[in-house]
Length: 172
Image (cartoon, rainbow, N blue to C red; front, side):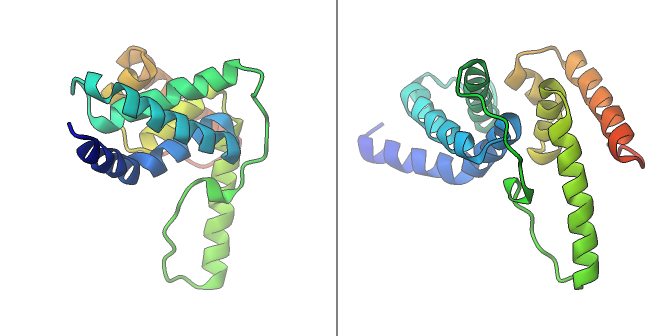
């Protein structure tokens, strides 16, 4: 691949998967600043290892796996910080709704986000990958390098914990 073709390909990957990398990194690390560092490091590693990508999993799964591994490295390092995550860590589309309904939905969404952020790491990762990245059990298993049965049991446990934290029914 020529340098020009590689630049175009990396640009495409960043445009297609960049927001996903930022979201998962923010959820895992609970820091927008660290998530931005992970974003940069992820795509640097993608550039370095692109020729070694064998297509055994989807591009998204491959790139998210790289991001999750970098996040885990950050969490093991001295750079780990605990910060308050606000509503802006996920991108939502705004519908035409009246102010009262919008405030109610925002309040419910914030309660859910707060509950998700209180989950232990192993459950928070699963919830984010499944619901916010639309990944299936097998792709999550590949990303996290755990058996599919473990993904299913953690997803079930995470839903139960969320149900206990915010009440109502845990949907799935």
